[in-house]
Length: 258
Image (cartoon, rainbow, N blue to C red; front, side):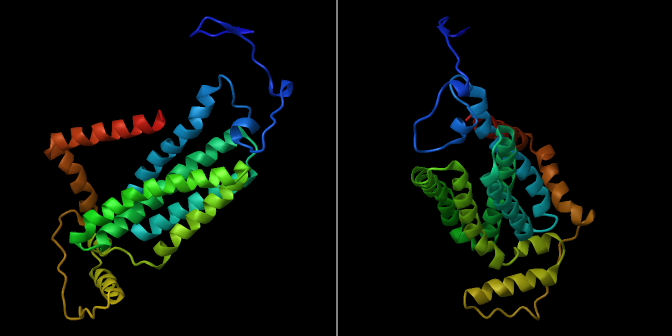
């Protein structure tokens, strides 16, 4: 018997061997006995996903400008699909935490990469529309996830369905072309022209770039100029730095405490 510090009332805590669930659906809360006053354990399953997401955003930010938007997105997608499939064999709470962490890492790498690819390949007059559509997909995804949970009785099986859905969303990225802006940032003018020509062909336009010369902007610091310039912007504009830090703090705090 223990005393609840909030109410001051005594209560009994039963072990999992002292009661039996009589319900059709299985969940990790039941399987791992995360019931009654195990609030921290239940919250950590959600919070650790966003901690992994933060790691994915940091790693992705580096890889997007290093190996490209498309390869980084596919790496994130492969990671997310793999660890989600592994969830089928999850029989341990701490194993579940590891799966959730790497899910967050992979999902945010592919999600951010796909968003960047779409925005950089899209004509400027359509970017606001595609941005709104991308945000609207969250509203579509949550009901779909709820439907999977409603019709699926086993939470391990839900991981299989989630992995299949992730694989389907990766298919367009496999067949898309790398962003021309990535090639320009790397100084690969021929790669940029090839990417632009492919995008033009997909839209039924015969774009002649053989005689077009793309001039690379002069840079005293080589390929690292792109990354360093972004960091210098924070030094030049303290307000931008403060705004970024506030947004990062709010996003991280809300997600982790969700």
